[in-house]
Length: 147
Ligand SMILES: Nc1ncnc2c1ncn2[C@@H]1O[C@H](COP(=O)(O)OS(=O)(=O)O)[C@@H](OP(=O)(O)O)[C@H]1O
Image (cartoon, rainbow, N blue to C red):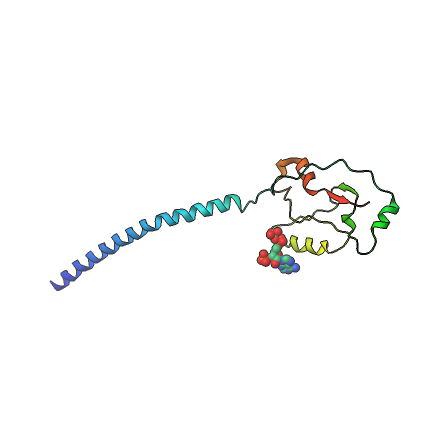
C-alpha cells in the first residue's frame, strides 16, 4: 500500500512536473520567437553586409593636368600631397581580402605614407555593391590627385 501510494504519488508528481514543463516551454515561446527573429534579421542584414550609403555627387570631368613644376612645388615638406588641387582619378591599387584577413590593418599601415591617399571606409563594390554600377563606384572612390 505504502508502496503503491508512493508510486501513485510519484506518478502524480511526474505528471505535475510534465505540466510544469509544458507551461515553462509555453512561457519561453515568445522570448524564443523574438530571439529567432532577431537572429534572422542579423543574418539577413549584418552578415552579408550592406552597401555604404548612396554615392556622393558624380565625379566631375577631370581637370587638365597641371604642369610638372606645380606638383613639385606642392610636394613641399609638411603639405599632404593628396590634399592640394589636382585632378580626380581612380585608385591605383585595390586591397582585396577575406573577412578578418587583416585588410584594415594593411590599409592603415599604407595610409601612413604621405603619398598614399585612401578611403576612410571600405566601398565593398565588388562583393556587395556591384549592381550599383560604375557610376556609383566612381562617385565613391575617385580621389583628388596632384599630378
Ligand atoms: N598582423 C596581424 N596579425 C594578426 N591579426 C591581425 C593582424 N592585423 C590585423 N589582425 C586582425 O585581423 C582582424 C581584422 O581583419 P580585417 O581588417 O580583415 O577585418 S574585417 O573583416 O574587414 O572587418 C582583427 O581581428 P579581431 O580583433 O579578432 O577582429 C585584427 O586584430
